[in-house]
Amino acid sequence: MLLEAAMQRIRVLIADDRWLVHRGMSSLFFDSDEVEVVGEATRETEEQISRLAPDVVLLDLTRRGSLEAIRRIRASRPQTPIMVLADGCTESEIVDAVGEGALGCLGKGAGPKGGSAGPNAEPLTGREIEVLRLLAKGLEDREIGLALHISMGTVRTHVSNALGKLELRNRVEATLYALRHGLVSLDS
Image 1: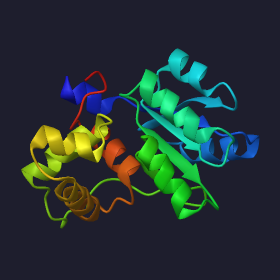
Image 2: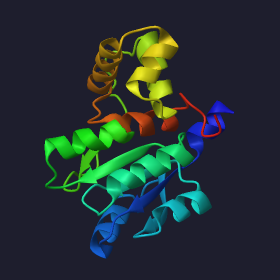
Image 3: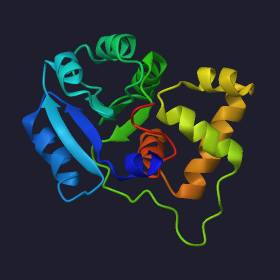
């Protein structure tokens, strides 16, 4: 089962009001064997999520009602990770989005980056793997801390250490890494 999950493509829904952003984001994944863009939503994001059941949602933070959309998505599909696309957003807007349940922020100008550790990379500890698994399941730091009986600060430290070891930039890349490498099943 884990081998099958590791070989499945990660299904992504891009939710942005601008067609050009859709095209640009989709083109990042065009040749990917690991990621499949299953939909592009403008205003009908929640209906698309319900219909397409993506593994990850990339949601434009600058669109009107984006924070409310994050709340509604988290309430109806708490297992679906949400990554906000932000370009020109303030730090407080990003903090608000994360507070509503988004995993993190990806700048629209960011280029693609591989998610596998190099041959000389330091291996993850057992606890870092546990934290990545729960992160990929959509749990927030507080929930991960409760599940593992550790503080939120310790959760953040484990996430930060794992990101550094795997040469990943953010939590969505960590989630994609966990899915891609079979640390968590798409069905769990």
